[in-house]
Length: 141
Image 1 (spheres, rainbow, N blue to C red):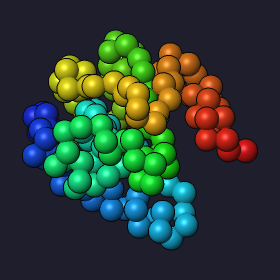
Image 2 (image 1 turned 120 degrees about the vertical axis):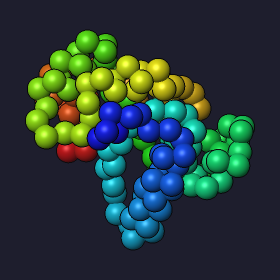
Image 3 (image 1 turned 45 degrees about the horizontal axis):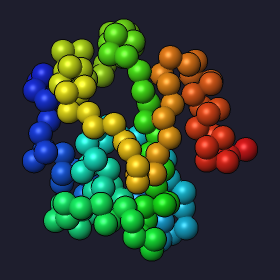
Image 4 (image 1 turned 180 degrees about the horizontal axis):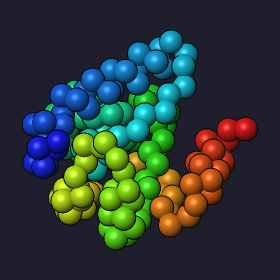
């Protein structure tokens, strides 16, 4: 991405496996975790929840297993128009994500849907409203 080339599945999947392993390690240690990444595709989110098993399964059975990590992982879908996100990208300094890659991100995006465990938060709200909405969903104080 730093060279202006969008990542593909081959680039992302090993990285997502590593993130899954971090999530599981922290869960086993009794820790709560907030992980920020652009899990654009349903398959990417399934990998975060189920690891390598998600790559071998094409059905939703992983999300339906009550004993899996599915219910423990809440995805926050930050939803907003491309123009708003582009204007925010242009204000960033020293970030690897070039504005030119934004279109490819929207083309790759598969918004979350049932049975995934997610909430949608509008990016058109203020940062404090976004944080408050997420905290309320997590029942944080």
